[in-house]
Length: 283
Ligand code: JAH
Image (cartoon, rainbow, N blue to C red; front, side, top):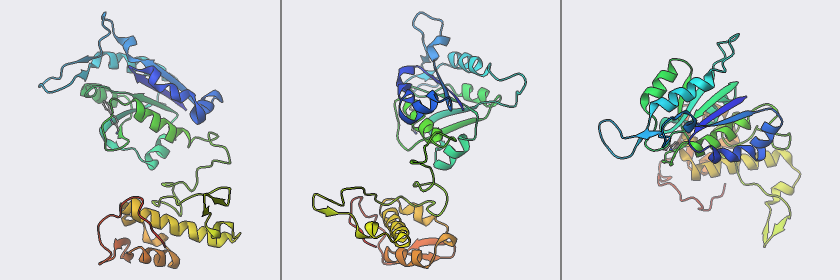
């Protein structure tokens, strides 16, 4: 996969040269190119921003440098396969949610361009004109405002990059993560333990050292339900009940959730106040 990042702070993307993603790039699985937007400014101050039309606080990124930057990067579209266009990704708090499903979809692309805004954002005409030439995704990594899109790009490139064939080793593997598809879809992962078997007076749960694989799978699933109830009850509410067996239903009933039609609902009397993170729970 080729990834181009256009930013006024190319040094902010230095972490892409490190760890999992850096190694994938070293191995030729990823071709990451960062571009300084100011390379497409021609005034002495290398200006990338201006005051907003209509008034209001802050500054807006000027369209001209962005237009030339995108023209330059997409000039690499192969003349023999003009259908192989990049997808332009624009991180913005007003975008659609960047989810695991979106990461998996973008991991199918052979070429992504990330446009990092700063200030109050990029002149709308840049995104609208790009959308006439290539697929454009305006995406939000969460409901908070950053100082610019760079950190969101780090997040998205890591989430996408680890899904590419050959990037993760066998030891790491993609399957049973929280938010992965399959039996644990829309459930959070439960707790994990390693040696020593006792640490500062705390033993590892006995079941994990029992050698009973079936019981361990069951226990982990019950822990996942318990943690999801506490931390992300809205995920349980959208869980497909067709995927629940009898023991799942018993575990969920003990946590105050029951099947109603095709969905899980909070049991009446179970209380609808959200338990605080860190509250104790037992199955
Ligand atoms: C802030 C341009 N969803 C996280 C996110 C993504 C981008 C930005 N903020 C938050 C942002 C300022 C300018 C983009």
